[in-house]
Picture 1 (cartoon, helix red, strand yellow):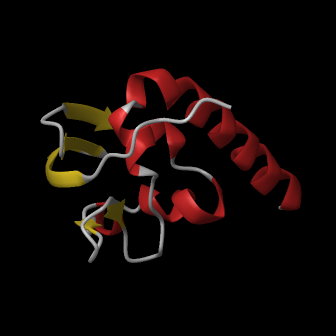
Picture 2 (cartoon, rainbow, N blue to C red; picture 1 turned 90 degrees about the vertical axis):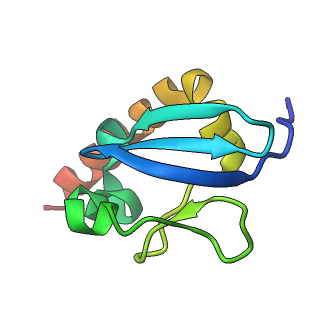
Length: 102
């Protein structure tokens, strides 16, 4: 299993609907549009733009979190271009499970 280096989120800005510009401790800045991964019990509620926009950096200064407890591993945020497709695929599975329960 490949281990990613540990990173910390140092700043963020809301730059559009469901879109954040995230800065990391190594100076990297990622512009991330989360809209396609907002499915399932944890991330689905973030489709409410008011809730999504209530994002903050965790008290320990490691990553982003939302009032409903949703968060992302800071290394995954750092390497978003490499992991985005996996998150989108997982979101489709979460949505399918939710639809099956209904």
